[in-house]
Length: 175
Image (cartoon, rainbow, N blue to C red):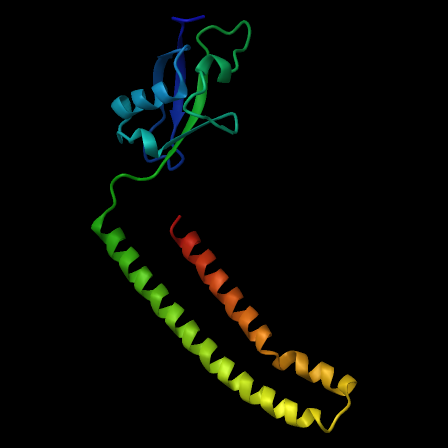
């Protein structure tokens, strides 16, 4: 089976680059195909940034094409469709500026959240002291429903959730 040349159609997800037809040996590994794409693909993506997907499966560099590509019997000159995903190599200065502004806004938002959290913690501690004074006047069952809302741990949990959401949103915006 070595020495057989197969046609592989390389599709880019952003459609800025037309589908490329690459002829390669069926005995190649995925790593060799990536090296070949570094030379012949229009954007010249580096091997380390390339991810190849065939039939919904992320291909490992050590995989051999003959083991991965599914051959349909009776079809000569069959083309295999492989999706190429890679990080953009060329970032415009506008995009870099936008990222700097976004990072500044995120840092500002984080410091605002931290400041708000500290203010809320002080406020809750004051309220907690007030509740403790009231506690001497009421039975524990009367106090339970009121005290759970003024527990400083709930505020900490809220701050953690806000921080997690900020991190999640930051990661989403970087995609």
